[in-house]
Each structure stands twice: as structure tokens, then as C-alpha cells.
Image (cartoon, rainbow, N blue to C red):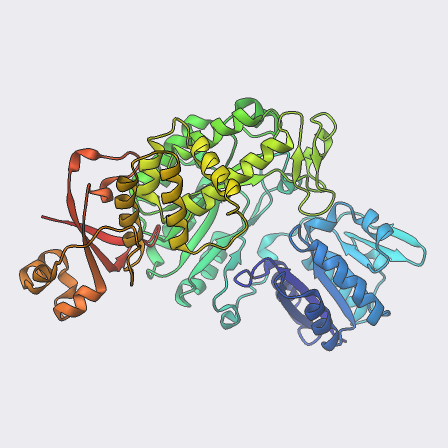
Length: 572
């Protein structure tokens, strides 16, 4: 008997904690259970054929918003070529509308609602050991002849009963590791499915520490905690972070979703002591409009959140990713632009613009009629318009989203954007005008090279009548801050000769102490020197034109853990 657990991830670098956890929890059936992971970049025909060739007796598929359209087509084909094989679905995309899915899709045998570890154990007993009956298994909706039967919900699982699923860590090379220290969320955000499970359950700290030590010892590049609000319990946060600081080997990065307003002084002090790159924080702001936050059941004091974000930024050691959602109640176009400008003013390392999705089971579904929400009927169920925001407004915000992603979140245009911002009262309007320029020139939907993005920005600056020569200077700085260019852009000024500087051993000791073992020609190839109008390396949130001309030395052997930019030294 072979039970095949299938995951279809959004990207190759992702891994599926869901099927991994189910398989690990049911190690007693390891001879019968096989895990198969694919991505939505695989063709449906490839996935279908691969599942068929594995010759399973039962198939279970993990369903999410990003893969459900794929899943429906694949299981439809599987049913035709494997007519007698039971097909079970699980995951958030099917848990809250299980009866309807079975009514509409004859390919599905049954659906596992909610957490799957214990439910799959009982299904394995049924299929492998021939024990029990589905009607006695809690937490499933299944087809029994012409009837559709839903059993009572299953009690939440104690996370301390979960079994570590990364013992064969070599199978996850070049992939992100997902880890859960807790399940549930104490908050009730109406757009989120996590609010359904309000009973937060934590693993024991000793168990967590032991499992995190495994990742650290194996030098795993990144571990992403799936805890919905990691810092909702202060003792939990401090216990984990103190342990990470103590055990850190300088390699593994840990990602946490947090509410920045909840941090206390001791937690901020812990962050300040961390190695650059030890942790990164994802912070859901969603909106700065108080009426909107109240409508979606979020109680986030903006003054405290923004103060803590700025405080953490001042440490210079922690990547911060802040989120906004367009399409929320009471958030019209002008209000969203203000929310964007408020968050942009914090200078996060990434500013993610998302669009409200009407997820099955989320409380926001109850307000669809009241808020006149129009949304996609197929995944990702994204809002197209509502009482406060027209579809035309949504399209404008999408332009801002794309330009923000390309020019801000890439961290490749930092100084250039600071100079450009001075021409605008609103960063939102700056990105909008740049996006409209792309649109009018037919430049959207094209995979432009990095250099092409600079060329387009230069053309936009010229189109707006701004000082092109000033932008050429600052863009050249941004280019060299990230990369030792093999060829200079056509618009770059002629570079001065700095060979005499490199021949002077005293200069190398003074500015590049760890290059003393290299010959001067090697050092030239490994670094770059350039004269600029200003010392752009001092520009963080606002340009400083008081510095005057500056000769800057770019050291590519030493890079920032935050944005991967080169170490930059001003040469006197």
C-alpha cells in the first residue's frame, strides 16, 4: 500500500511544512507513505504523469490559494487515469468550504479540515491496517456513495506532539526551511484565516531550542518561523532570541512575523546585540487609517509601531519587511496613498504592497455586501473594487506596487531614489508617475535587465525636466555600490586614473587592511574607486549636499548583511 502526499509549492526554494509534518508524525507508516513536492512552474502534465508513475493507492494533496487552480485540473485528470484511487485534499483553501467542493468536484474522495497530522494517522489506519471507518474519524468531509458526510471538528493538536521533520536535512539543500514554534493567533484580523484558531499553543522552549540547534549546527542558510504573531508572548520571544544569540555560528538567518508595537525594552535591547543578519522581521502594518484598522479588528498603535521600527533600524543589523494591503474597508485611494507615504517614511528594507483577498472562511466574507466588494471568482480571490476604491484606483496602485518592487525593494537605487524624492511631495505619487511613464512607453510586462532599469530611470528624469547630469552621477554610485561593473554605462562620465593610489602600500593598509596579501593589480580588480559630486554613502533618509565632492572606494569583499551592498569608504 502506497500513500502519496503531494505538495505543489509556489517556488522551488520553498518547502512544504504541511506534508513534511504529516509524514514525520506518522513515521510508524513510513514504509507506506511517500512525499512528492512540485512547484507551479512544473507543467500540470508533468505533475500528473509523475504521480501516475509512482503508482499510489491513495493520493493526498495540500491545497493553498497559490496552487488550487493547478490542483483541480490535476486531480481531474488523475481521476480519469486512476479511476479507483481515493483522492483526499487538505489545507486552508479547502477546509472551510469542504461540502461545496465535494458537491462541485466528483474527483475528490474527501477533505481533511484543519490540522492533518492526527487525522491522517486515522486514515492510514483505515487504508493500511484496514481498521475503523471514515465516519468515525473527526475533522473530515467525505463522499459515501451519493451522500456527503461531515464528521465533527477535531480538537486542536498539542504542538509538543509534533515530530521534527528535517532529520534528512540534505534533502532541503538550497531551499527555505519552515518551522513552527506555535500554532494559532491571539488576534482577530478579519481578512486572515489565522483568526479562526484563536487558541495559541506553544511548543516547550527546551524542545524548540533543541530543534533550532540542529539548524544552526547544520549551517542552514535560512529558517522561517510560521508563527502568525511570533512576539505575542514575551517570555517565549526572549527565551528563543537569547538562545539564538548564544548559539549563533554566524551563518543561519531566522525570519519572524511580528507585531512591532508589542516589543518591550528588553526585546529591543536583545535585537541591538544581535549579529547583523541573525534575524529578519516581517511586520504587518496593513493600513495607518484608524477607521480601517478598527473595521478589520486590528488594534495597532501607529506611534508605538513606527517608533520601534525606527529604533530597530538605528541598530543597522536587522532587515525589516513592512506590509500594506490595498482594498480594505474605509481605505480609499487618497487614504491608501497616505498609508503608503507613512510606511515609506520609516525606510523599511522592503515595503510590500498586497491586495485584499477574500479568503474562504475569513470574517471579511461577511462584509462583502456591505462594503460592495467585487473580487475574482477564482484564486487568488483578489479584490477588484469596493465602495471606497474603484478598479481604476486599483490599477494605479498596481503601478505603484511594481515600481516600488523594482526600484525600492531591490535596494539597487537607494541614493537615486533619495534624490528623486526631493522632486515630489509624496513618494506614492513619485512611484505612480514612474509607473505611468512605463505604461505609456509600453515598458510594462518586460523582464528588463538591471542596466535597462537605470536607462529607463534616466529617460524618466529627462522627461520630467530634472537635472540629468546629477542623476547620472548618483545612479553611477548606486551601480557600483552593488557591483564592480565590467563595462560602464554609455552615459557615465570618464573615470579618473587611480593606479597610483593602489601602488601605495600605506593606502592599502589604511583603507583596505585585509587586502595586504594581494598585488595591486588584484586589488584594482577586486575594488573600485570613483569621484562623485557628493558622498552618497551618507545618504540614508535625506540627501546631504553639504559634503561636496567625494572619492569613494568600494570594497566588494565586505558586504552588508541587510542589502548586500559593498562596504564604502571615503578616501581623503
